[in-house]
Length: 155
Image (spheres, rainbow, N blue to C red):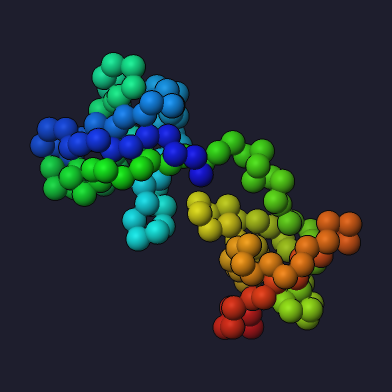
């Protein structure tokens, strides 16, 4: 995820916020794509329902789920992130690879689920987190991935 802005202050009483960025053009944000604000270490998606540019580096946004001044004040000071272009994510696509749990064959990875901040592997009906701390070995030539899957996640 790429930090694109920071919530500077609440703006008005309707839940609007003033966002600022010195490195990213806020007019380039696609309102059909979510932006993410971190709560308790997890990225929470928000959509920009309305946007009004305020100078070169600021914009007033109305975000989904932000209905009043109290909601807006909860966002003040938080960084705003967007997903990076899909090129990087596609490099880590393990679809079709054989998955092992500590050397025991689990099955073939059917798909990658690109949940923001939490990519997952789908093997049959099972959804498993993919985190660098869980990877024991990856062999691109053999297309095998060996993980230390946390207990209780596999049947």
